[in-house]
Amino acid sequence: MVTVSHKKELMIVKYINRYEDVIIFEEVSGNIKMTFTEDSGLYIRYGWKTDSDKENGVYDMIDGSGGPYITESTNMGRFHKNWEGKLVDYITPENPSSKNTYLLVIK
Image 1: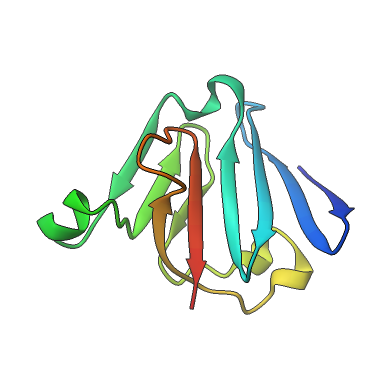
Image 2 (image 1 turned 90 degrees about the vertical axis):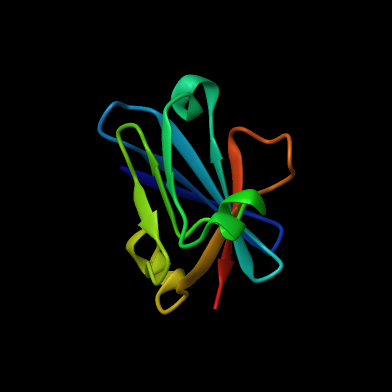
C-alpha cells in the first residue's frame, strides 16, 4: 500500500510492506531518503560488491524484513509514478550512526 503527500515541493511516499511495517520515502536533492519507522528497521539485509564498499557503507542492495527489496538499478517508479525512470545507483546510510535511514542515490 502506498500513500503520497506533498510537503512544500518535496514528494513523500508512505509504503506499507507485507508485515504492515511503514517505510517512508522522501525526495531530497534529487535522491530519495528511505526511513524504516519504529521496529521495521530491526532486520535488514545488505549487499555490496567489494569489501571496500562494505567498509565505506556503500551498498548495492537493501532488503528490510517484509520488503521492499531495493537494489542498484531499481526503478523508483514502482513506488510512485513521478519517480518513473529514477534508477538507484547505490545505497548508503544517511549518516554513519543511522540504523534506520538510508539514502538511495539516483543515477
